[in-house]
Image (cartoon, rainbow, N blue to C red; front, side, top):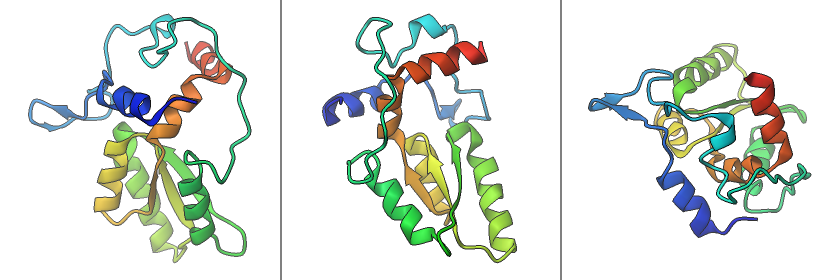
Length: 151
């Protein structure tokens, strides 16, 4: 597990931008250029060694906010959930508006970065900040497998 300092450093030094030319970036516009799967900027261990995926512990600092939000949002044990980063913030907002129009209140968005979480919560969207969990996920072999599958 990375220290909180390391996770905050990763978030602060991310090559992904959310502000382009003084305005909010359009989807994909703020993505880093020239990064390959082999040069993953979040792989601070320096090598390609990755850990096996682990079961999430609902009591851990990484998953407790999500577990609490899901329990709060649940209706008859059911929660509708989507995940979105800053590039997909408007899609996630629209997704939540559709649930509201249907009269459903048991939905939440798992924001993959702090900027998406801030944007969504400012608009009244029930959101959980999952940015610290992303660094933990990037340590796993599963992350490398997904990157290879998308390449």
